[in-house]
Image 1 (spheres, rainbow, N blue to C red):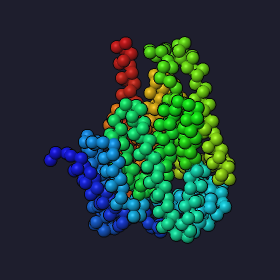
Image 2: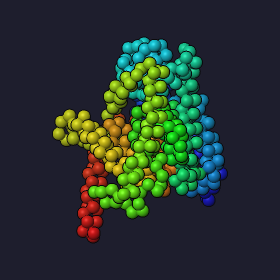
Image 3: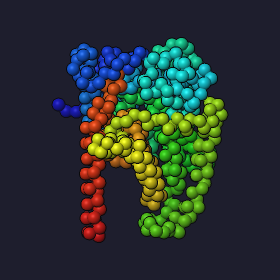
Image 4: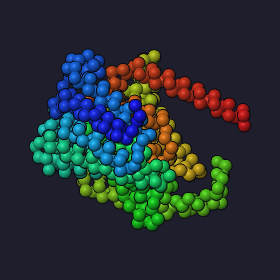
Length: 478
C-alpha cells in the first residue's frame, strides 16, 4: 500500500479516536483511585477494551507521525491534520497524568488569596484536593507567576465546577499549542528548514496530543512562548522588537523557569550574521571581528534582557508573590525514576552498594548541565547556529535534570525540528516517551525502576567508552 497524505491523515485520526476511547474508559479521573500499573492494565482487570484501545491508539499515532513526515504536502495541511487529531480527545478526561488537578488547586490557592509558594494545596484547603496526586498535596507550586495568574483566572470563571476548571485549563493548553503552530514555521523558514515538515514533526507528535492537549500540561504554553520569542529575536532589527522578544521569553519563564536557558542563545541569534570572520578562531583567542562583535553584544543583550526583566517584574507584582516561586523549584524533583539519567545512575549505585547516592548523582548532573550550557553558548558564539544550540540547550536540560517526564521531550523538539535537519535520535526519544505512561498516568519508569536504572546506566557507560575511543582515534589520525 502506497503511503499518501490522505492515508496518514485519516489513519492518524483513527488512532486519535482509539486514544480518546482510553480517556473515556480509563483517563485520569476526578477522584484518585489506587494506582493502576501497566501489568494491571494489560491483564484486563479494568476491562479488555481499555488496554486494546491504549496499545492500538498509541501504535497507530506513532506510526502515522513517523512515516507521515515523508508525505507532508504543506504547512496548512500539517496544521489541519494535527488539529483534526486533537479533536477526539478534547471532551474526555486527561490522559497520561493527573497534574492538571494540582494546577486547579494551585490556581484556587492563588485565587483565594493564599500563597501557592508557601503552602501545599492540602494545607490550604482546596475543595478538589481529593483529585490531586499525593506527591503534590504538600508541595509548593513549582511554576511561575504567569501560570498561577492564569490558573486563578480560570478558577474565578469556572467557580465551584472542577470540570469547568479542567476545561478552562485545557483551553489554555490549546492556546499554547497554537503559539507553537505560529512560532515553529517562522523559525523553520529563518533557518532554511521546510516549515511544513517542521510543523508536522512537532504538532503531530503523539506527545503533543496525549500530554499537551489531553493531559493539559502547562509545558504547551511555555514551549509556545519560547518558539515565538526566538522567532522575534532572530528577526528583530530594532531594539523595540528585541525587547518584545525578551518580554515574550520572560512570559515563558513566568510559566516555567526552564525557559531561561534559551535567553543567552536568543541574544546570539539577534546578532548580525557578519559579526565574525569566515573561519572560526582558535579557542585560545578571538579574531578582531570577534572582538568587535563582543562589544556589539551588549546591544541585543540589553534589549532582550530589559524586556525579560520588565515582563518578569510585572508578573511578580501582578501576582503579589515576588520571587517566591523560585523556592518551589526545590520540590520539583520528588519523583525518582530511571527517566532521568543522573537519577538512574544513583539508583544503580544504591542497588549495588546500598549507599544513598541519588542526591549526589543528581547534584553532579545539575553541575554537569551548568558546564554544558556554558560550552554550548561558547560553541554557538564561535561557530554560529545560535537557534540550533538553543534547542540543544533544552535537550541538555531535559537529559541532565533530576526528573524526566515524557512531555519534557517537547521542549527541544519544538526548537530542533525548526532549526536543524531531521535527527532520528530525537524523534526516537519522542516516540519512546509517548509509550511511557498509562491512560490514568502511571509511568512505566516507576514500575521498572531498578531494571530500568541498570539498563540506562549500562547504556551511559557504553556511550562514554565509545566516545572516548572515537576521540582517541581522531587524535591518532590527526
